[in-house]
Length: 410
Image (cartoon, one colour):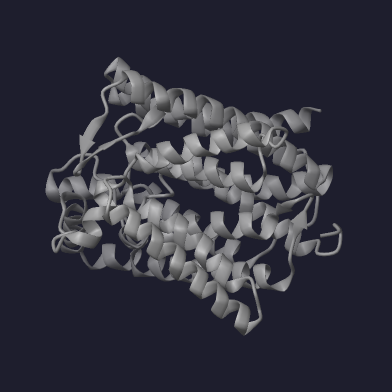
């Protein structure tokens, strides 16, 4: 029973930690926000490590995981030598949390079975959905919704950060739909999903909205080996996307996405310009050593501040982040990590259909991993552990299912 509670507690801490940003803003302390996140992430790491120490099994050895470990702990060593603990401790906690979530998930399924994982995920996501809907509609009804980048954008418990909110909502939407949460009453389930989608669309975050649609579309395309079925799937996807685009263009359901299709300057708004400015400033500020081995894990903010005198600026791009913090060496390893992970994911989905008790595990795994690891490169996904940890939970599930192909009747 203790093993079960430890795993569940770690995920519940992650869900509850989404309130840290709201508390920090309400208290009026950015330091509180950072300290709260640090304590929460450290707590999750400790709980996951305790869980892993209690479990025994064969070594989990996969190329992309080894590359991840080399990248993260290599840049961490550089950061220890070049930066202060306040820079690298939060980052190494986050990345270690992701790795542990993957390993512990694998071990827990090995010990307790697949039903256990699904049951735990359902209960945790159900709790997260309920509190997120309550807070989200409280913002709609009672709070001041912020006008940012051309739209009034919801941000829920991530108050003032609609992008972080959108990514957390993607986790809730995909898990609720794919795991059939609230399955005892289909009306309740679809009402909950509809409310989550409403909140998600009103974050007006363009990349997450496009990315989620693209992830499902690509899954539909690659899951079939038959060429005729693939051609049919392409037509269905094009018709569906065209219909959605027509609705967006002819309504104000999503003004920021509408601008992409009707404005000549759609890619020249403040959000896009800021990203290009960060890229330019980063390249200009790096010397030959920085470009070779980077400024170290977690060192981007301090590096950027020193060269531009701008506080709290994030890379907004995983490739830029790992180039800045790991140099060309780090960027090369990160790209290798992505290539090997994508190849593994592609082969995994194509090899065998896995529908377990009505749950399409292949689709759940593909959409979550493909979106966050490949399409979210402009979204700072590694910063937001509230959503990213669930990605590595799913990667752990994928690794287990790949190793135990014949253990379950799919």
